[in-house]
Image (tube, rainbow, N blue to C red; front, side, top):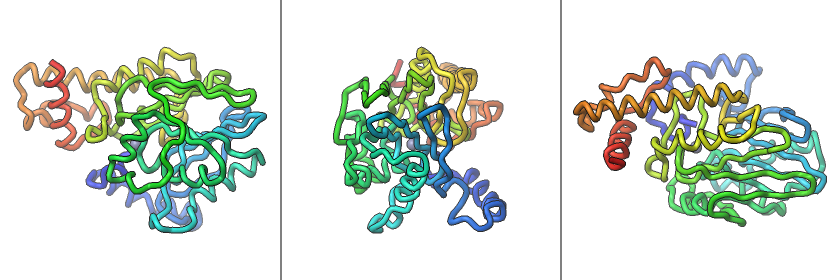
Length: 300
Ligand SMILES: [Zn+2]
């Protein structure tokens, strides 16, 4: 999510602050700002559940041999805290629907809100499955290098995880939000976890950690090549296939406009002012356009 990745995004932060009093009033006094609290578990499909809040969305696949969990929410705060509130809350919600042990954890990308409680699951006996690139970026990114819980099973590109009566397919369709995004597909329920490749807010390209604006639509093409009914974003509500197509079209428009502006002579400094994005509902910082300029001119 943009807010936690880049605290400098003034507009978003102001909007969040404005929402807090309403959220507190509604919840009768929550523990934090909207989205920071682990919410009640919800069933998406038979044997497939979602827990929102406390970081990125978490999915739980129940099998007859144990559980597969996708993404482990924000780490304990402060990092030295002995107990992770988010981990305990997630387990509390899971225990309300099943007593099966967690056998596997999958990470969709290396950001703190997706990997924050890996170690707790490892300590409880789970394996953490992720791209080799995810392990590398997690070790290099200043925001995650001190978070314990590196992946214990890594793969280079695609991976099929089988547990009991369930099969989960992991796809790397290139670089997008980061250099290690993994699309997690549940073929029997026709659900795909698309992580932060689909956003309600302005999309974030983490250029410093392998992200790519040019790769973004290619990754969504990979998603759209699969047979799914629901796409679960890193934050927010489930999306339809039409939502994913619409998002892809918007991102494609953004890149085409930037590319056209550069062809018409826009310099790196001018690009931000020459690419229209308000009709897309997105607001980028000038630094985004500087990185986009670099990527587009390198690709020539
Ligand atoms: Zn992220």
